[in-house]
Image 1 (cartoon, rainbow, N blue to C red):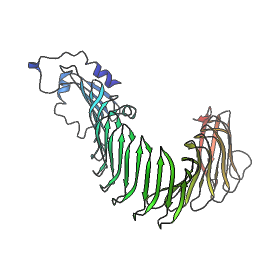
Image 2 (image 1 turned 135 degrees about the vertical axis):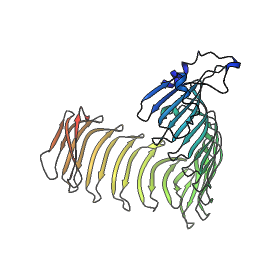
Image 3 (image 1 turned 120 degrees about the horizontal axis):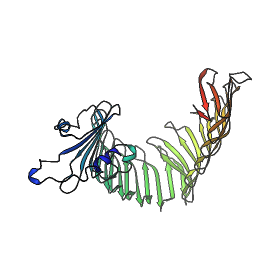
Image 4 (image 1 turned 90 degrees about the vertical axis):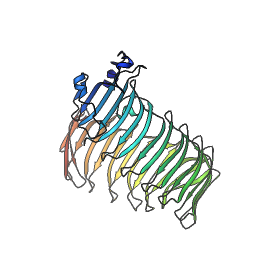
Length: 417
């Protein structure tokens, strides 16, 4: 906000005659925020003169600097906004025209290597996450990793990805080619391994998969051969690394396999061409990690996480239309119940009970819309609580699974104080 006001304050500055102008824009205001968040605004000629020749894209003892120049004869007010890492290295730089970002945008890693080079043509003139969400990118945006290797080439048109997006592996080889049209995938998409071997290719129309899609194992043999129509999976065949068929989708019904680089990543149930039902997710070693159920594109039903290498449950949560709703349970590795609680629309609501590893009671809590109403906390093996919370006020005494003291938490009006 302060930068916007500073720019507007120059809106009525008059143009000097051409014969009286100095070459280039003349500095009018400098606003500085130091690393302690202290702000200083400088506008006097003598003070401004000290910044002549200063390279603001070099290491500086500031957090953020806004340089505003006098209004030119065309009525425009130019400004440069620069932020710095705690080390003093430049972090971000953006050009501002008439109170809106417009021009070059640059971003650096703390090491000083360039991260992003782009052009913006509109948006809030500040270097905050909230402001950056309003920015409109245009033209080619380039991204590098911290070692200076190209990470991506992203063509924009008035805020939307438009053209062939290219992503690169850290070794410099091409990773992804994704054709975009006004923010939607349109055309043949290809993904490659670090060694440049083709991993997958697919076609999109209006951001929906359409036509053949193929996935390959590193030895160039087929892992998946699918066909989509208007975003729906019509048929698919899936093979393991030895060429053995492991699953099939026929007329939109069956189990679709998604692969990682070396193994099965997940198994999805399909009904009438749409993902519906159970989804199983696997580790890189091919072991079941967790499974859940989905309906209409969101989680619906139980999600169960298991202990690695076993089918023993570790965590169970219940979803209703994408929100946590219903019982939630956890277990120790030996199968003993660890905790149980009720959730309603992503909030704790009702009783929460927890037990020690030996099965003795650890705590009982009662919640109302995520607010703690009542709680009783027990040392292992004891029948009387060591502390309580009543009507949202009190102290929760917490122990680990073996009964070792962890900490005390004071509650006020149902929330940690």
